[in-house]
Length: 186
Image 1 (cartoon, rainbow, N blue to C red):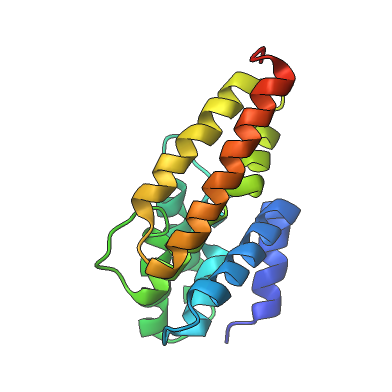
Image 2 (cartoon, rainbow, N blue to C red; image 1 turned 90 degrees about the vertical axis):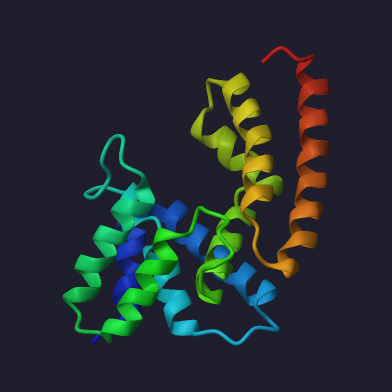
C-alpha cells in the first residue's frame, strides 16, 4: 500500500525544500486550473510528487531527460508498493508527459504538465532561473526569457491561459526592471 506521507518525505529527502515546494505549488495550480474537470486526484498527487525524481540523486543521469529517469524511478517505487497496476500506468503517463504540450494525453497528464510549466514563469520562474545561475546573470536572464516561449508552447488547458498571460506580464516587468537597474550590465 502506498503511504503518501512516506512519498512526501522522500520527495523532501531527494529534492530538498525546492523539490517539495515546487510540487506543492503545482498541486495548488492544479486545484485552480482543474476546478471544472473530473479527474483522478490520487493519480495527480502521486505523479506530482514523483515527476522530478529523475532529476535528483540517486536517479539523475547526465544526458538523460529527467522525465524518462523519473518514469524509471516511479516505476520502481510504485512497483514495490503494490498499488493498482492501472494507476501505475496512468501515473507513469503523467510523469512521462510533464514537459510536452501534446493534447492527446489524459486530463491528469495535461493538468500536471500545465501546472509544471506555470511554475516556471512569473516571479517564481524569474527567481528560479536566477537561483540556479547566481554568478551567470546573462545566462539566467536569457534562460528566463526563453522559458516564456517554452511554456506557451506546452499549455494544453484553456484555464491555464489567463494565468500564463498574467505571469508573462509580471515576468516582462521584472526583465525591464532588471535591465534598468543593471544598465544592461549583467
